[in-house]
Structures are given as C-alpha cells and as structure tokens.
Amino acid sequence: MRLYEPVTLAIPLAKGIGEFIMREGRLPDGDELREMLKSLGMEESCLDRGLALYRSRFLIALAFPRGETLVVDVISSSGELSDALEVVAYRDRKLEAFVVEILPTNDLEYEGNIGVEPIIIDEKTLELESSPVLGHFEEDEEGLFLVIYRETYERWKSGGDVHTCPVCGGELVWKGEKAYCQDCGYGVRVKD
Ligand SMILES: [Zn+2]
Image 1 (cartoon, helix red, strand yellow):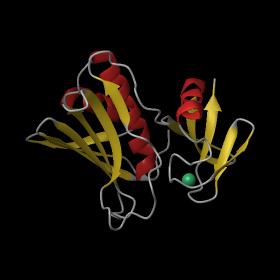
Image 2 (image 1 turned 135 degrees about the horizontal axis):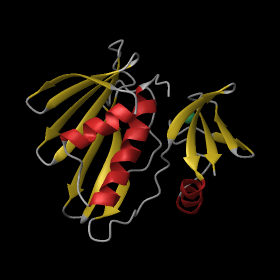
Image 3 (image 1 turned 180 degrees about the vertical axis):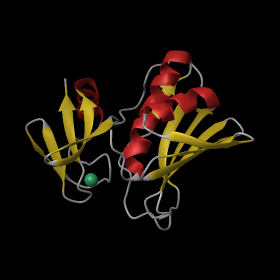
Image 4 (image 1 turned 135 degrees about the vertical axis):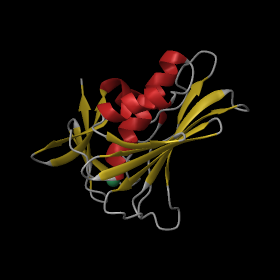
C-alpha cells in the first residue's frame, strides 16, 4: 500500500483500533499499536518513555498515551502541518462507550474537513453504535480510492449521507460502485 497524505494512514488506523476494541473490549497497548502501524507500512524509528515515532517515505506518526487516552499524530514527512491529523481513542465514562475519532491536529490551519463520524462502541456489548465510513486506500488508474466493504456502505446508507465525502466532507458523485469527490480528489469504492 502506498501512503501519501496523513488521511491515508489515519482512516485505516482508526478502523484497526476500532476493530481491536470490538474484539478485545479494551484499547490496544503500545505493542499492539506498533503491530497495527507496521501492518500499515510504518517503520518504527524511535521509542522513548511511552512515546513512539514511526515513519514511512511520506508520513511520520507519533504515538503517545495521554493518561487513559491513546493519541497518534500523523504528519507529512515534509513537516507540513496543515493536513496533519490526530487519531484519538478513549473510553467515555458518561457514554459508557469507547470512542475513536479522527481530528485535525491543528484546527486553525487544517484546510479540509474530516467527514468521518467517530467510531462509538458500546463498552458492554462491544457493538458499533455509529456509522463511520472507514476502509483502506488503494490506487488504480483513476486515482486514490477509499475502499470500503459493502457492510460499511450499507451502514453508511442507513445512518448517514452517501453523498458526503468521508475524507473531506465535500460532495460525492456516485457512478455505480465508485464515487468521486471534486473537493479532495479521493474517491470511494465499494468492495464485496
Ligand atoms: Zn472529498
């Protein structure tokens, strides 16, 4: 998989953390997070007192626990901060749920909008209570696509708006099983 912008790592990482929580009923620890980042093409390059730094050709990820919250910052390796994202996972005691969110690291400078709904998982049943549109990115001759499974698509259709781009919040135009976004240039593809 080729990784370009922070969103191409943040979305599959959030998906992986959500799946882990639904399976294990807890947040991943440092080692488990490391395995996830490695499987997404990131190499570990530094580890110091709970802080871990990972990198690929285009991206840098910084992982650190903040109390009971897991935070992974994803930054372009150019150092550009305007498209940096933060994947945050925590247990919300009031909601009695685990929450995984993708947020702009820098609210003031962030140029887009993340259209993905937070992942909300009931802490008792471990069932998904929201309809986040998460997948992984693949490149084909038409560009880079967020590839989602049919199940995710069906959930999105019943709980959200399939014409809102999950990457940027812009307008999606569907042609069969593929959708295109004029605003961010990423597309969405449904996979069986
Ligand atoms: Zn878009």
